[in-house]
Length: 343
Image (cartoon, rainbow, N blue to C red; front, side, top):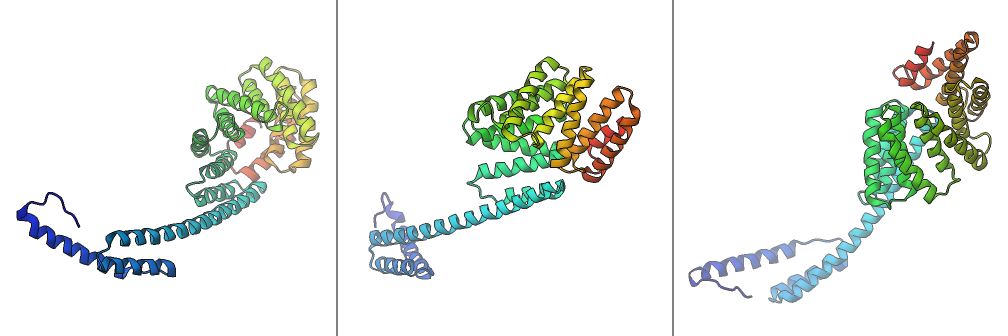
């Protein structure tokens, strides 16, 4: 034992304090309990070394005991984290089931619970579930809640992923879609452009996800009346999707619907109608007659007929779209107001 620079007048007090600490340490070592026999043996040996005044040996033995406990705890933690990740994945799959049923509120709740289960060292997994929750809330028309989640997910991915990672493009695309729906076009465009650049580089120019972003960017140009910029992007997306995913895929219906809307806006009604009809046929077959996307195409085809003064053909389509929207999305969804206005 060495104590440096102890003034003579304080020596007695210092020695008493050291003796008290030594006694307390002996008591604490004696009180140490462990269900690991090896750890228990080491702490017992450390106490014996301390009783003999062999502090270096006691320190060595206690560090060994601590190391064994740390290793065991890490294994338990790793095992627990794997369980949490598995539990989160199951919750997310339950959310997917609810999405298939178009039960958006229940799906969003499952994705939120999945994200909450993810361990802190798996932030990208958490971001993925946040993305899903944000998308679901977007479909439910809850834009502010969706925006907060999508931005948080993007922030995590920006921090952890490389600049050209396709997972980053997914979040950029999703947030851009939300901004476009809110009329925030200046915010949406650079996100779409960046997502497109990443997907073309990471996935290739003919990948379905590249086509998705082409379609979305084209729709942004269309809604702003930039038809000359929109049409070639739609045409390219249409070609990629039909080649990569087949002539009856829902993604193809989306681009057909959007290109038809472009032609309608340009007054090319004869070119628009067959595209709407084909989109409607695909959606009814692939998604079902009561799906919101089916309702969207019904409403768009009705709008085409209305524009041409064919009110008798338009009215039943609008009514059918209205019934689907009320049934699936509820009375407060933004899409309902659009259909009601058209009627």
